[in-house]
Image (cartoon, rainbow, N blue to C red; front, side):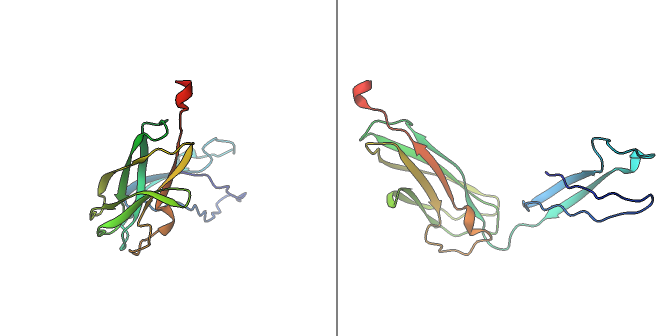
Length: 170
């Protein structure tokens, strides 16, 4: 998950090392290794490893995010119907039904609702729209109006490039 430098230590001394991690709900087994590359002379390497269990409770607030966003066909032809499958997940407390939008630039090209989600739940929503005449950046956004308070409001959108084929070249 990461590495952190340890300052030089005199024989028999100790130090506190802090490592910042993203807190993902669940039970995790973590292992810490001092001098994994064995770069330092050490008379006893058996005490260089520690393992511990870290239990991270689910957020007391909903935690919605988009797990995946896929468009079919991609690339598409101008004017063709494009289906976008959006998988929304909830890593926090149960969430009520909430809006879902698909936009291109500042224009929403499709909208739908995500059903209520329990902790750890997912929902798959399919949105359809007409392909534009040129390549577009599509942005799927769950809870676009910020209607529900969430643990992290910054992970509610995912972008996808939609390629557009020139029908004259086919």
